[in-house]
Length: 239
Image (cartoon, rainbow, N blue to C red; front, top):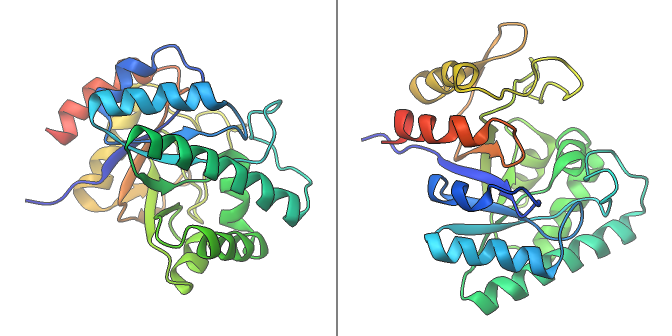
């Protein structure tokens, strides 16, 4: 039987329905203070993962809670790496205290997108991961600069596709500012999942077939429709 990608969800971001999402996912990427959160919110999400026997990963970001980490930030490499290290060490400490390993690292928002498109940033961030967390898998976008440098440096790379987002012809995400870039209903999401899981591709916004082989598929915890669509697609495609 064909092995299906895991379902991951970005959590620990203050959403009220987090508890009901955990049974429906395989792993959670938990905000660790950059774009949202503190020791209390991290611990609360880890406790839910422990309760439902789910894996957890760290979700570091630009240190920008004002903009939820969704805007490119002017910051020196030194300060950025210092912030990411603080976020990851705090998460790792709390996960270890709970008896759970850090399953993966996934950059958040603008940092994820910037590292996917910018080779210099991707090079520096993968050096950082190689130096500090070499054995921890890194979630990367397909055909991205981050994926390229992670593979070159022998990092444990996991290819991630977004189940609730649309793609451009170059495999980058259609910007959130574009109408329809963010899917919020099962009726929108299921056709893309059907071709992805059944035929190994998604259609770009212009109709190009993008061949993809994800290890993990992400649905955003703050998606306003997630409580409605996730139970349906979990049963429809993963059971």
